[in-house]
Amino acid sequence: MAERRQVLRYALVDGEPISAGGVRVTPQARVLEVHWRGGGLVWNRPVAVAVERDGHTTRMPIVDATRLVQLVLGVCAGVCAFMGTARMARSVRRGHE
Amino acid sequence: MSDEMNRVIESTEHAHERVIGLVERLTEVARPGAVFGEPMTAGANTVVTASEVFVAMGYGFGIGGGRPQQEEETGTQSEIHGGKVPSGYGGGGGGGGSSKGRPVAVITLNPEGVRIEPVLDLTKIGLAILMVLGSLLVMAGRLRRQA
Image 1: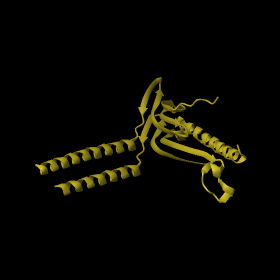
Image 2: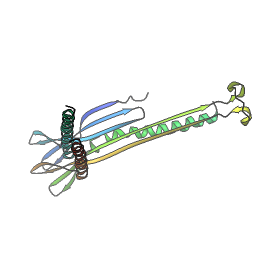
Image 3: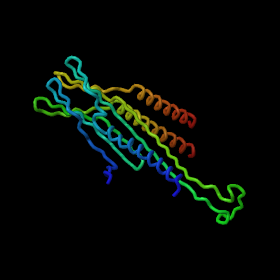
Image 4: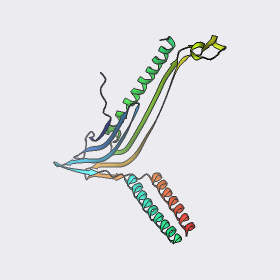
């Protein structure tokens, strides 16, 4: 019988540790995997690195600067559109009065 | 079942197996190795690149056929094909997909510590700025017309 495939998977996966200069780094990625009959999609993005040094482990997040700038621009555009629409509605209401 | 139909089913199954193999390979993209590059060492520095990967694909296919029908069954008068309505089998399929990758950050390891430097995709940011500015200009124009 064929192996039953998981339809949806959203997980944090650890990569192979890298050691250099007395530091051991374990990269972490966030995976979204969706499978359906006749296809599928995979979205894999880096989220952090776990840094082990002198017995201490710290987690350093990886910031997606491009996505962050796009989000900020999108929010700004949304706020401007909302304010503009509200102003337009106010002027139309005043015109009716 | 006719040989013709068997041939159609066989070729469709063959194509189906090949596409299933492709879909199975999607799992390879879900590994962390697809996101983090191989470490490269230059002097005391070890550099690892981190990228975002997106892959999507889909396919579909279908087969069908018809058996010959006599004039009496269809109730139509046909002079061609010896009074039979033509029959046959056929199949078809199609698929599509998209994949993209984008560098997100560069991780540098050295005796001083670990440094993560974000990578800015200026083309994407430029396009987003242009889109926002364009939307605002359209909105401002409409507001001015209303006033």
